[in-house]
Length: 243
Length: 116
View (cartoon, chains in turn orange, cyan):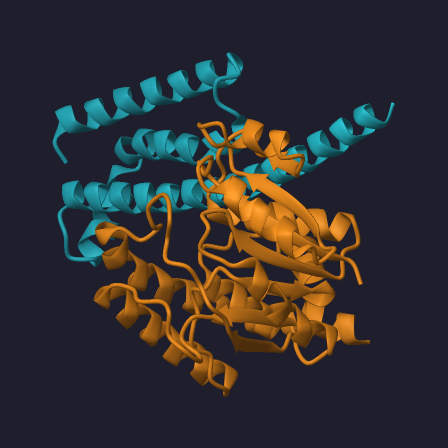
């Protein structure tokens, strides 16, 4: 089993050394790469100094651009599992086996590390919680089983999902809901496991007040867009892959 | 329709057509992107020429001929903006794919250089 941990970093020069030290201390034997989304600070040279393989974008390509890069990288290099890991110190290395093991046991194709299952260590703003509730409700209705934390960035994908996104679905992905829906349509089984998370240590959240107003509407449109693609994905991808 | 309006439409249409053709020759516009603009220019030229047809169409919809011009122009612009938006989305996807590919290739090149 070849397992890749991809750390997503955008202007994280302060926190990335801690994140990498945390990963190295646990020494799981996973490969680590840093996807540097054209940071304007010293993120790139800090990573070089820490002797981590760093893939740098030449210009900033939003958050979804980094997903594309690590999925393409994992596909090209034939990885079996790829994990997304934030570079801001929010995620803990000791939690990694929890989201990887369900895939190794072949119980799931995609595992979400959830902040809402189990003991609560994560509190977010009221508006954001409502947003997460809403999308969790919609996705649960479509999946016909419960998904609670739909915006978590702590996700692991298996080979099937990697191939789907690297080879078939090349269009833009705007938020995690869309990833979950598309991989669900592609026939992947998605599960959720409880994990612990740190509060955000450095930098600001993607969700500021303006975003928190626009985000729900945008998210709903994205879900409608995915629903429109459902038939095509099942016809062109799911059937071909399974046969 | 007012004669002055007809003349204005004709002159604007011809000027517009000339500007587009000039820009295509200077390679500032590509023919595939300017098809809709040429249609617009021809539309402006053809209004005064086939005035009676135009007026009877306007009457069919129960509006004045002048208003029909506005309606058609706005409709045209909406279609064009939609077309441009779809092009932007396509370009956006292609650029993202290229950024990701070039980053991965650059990394592979660096690894090869290290080995040598």
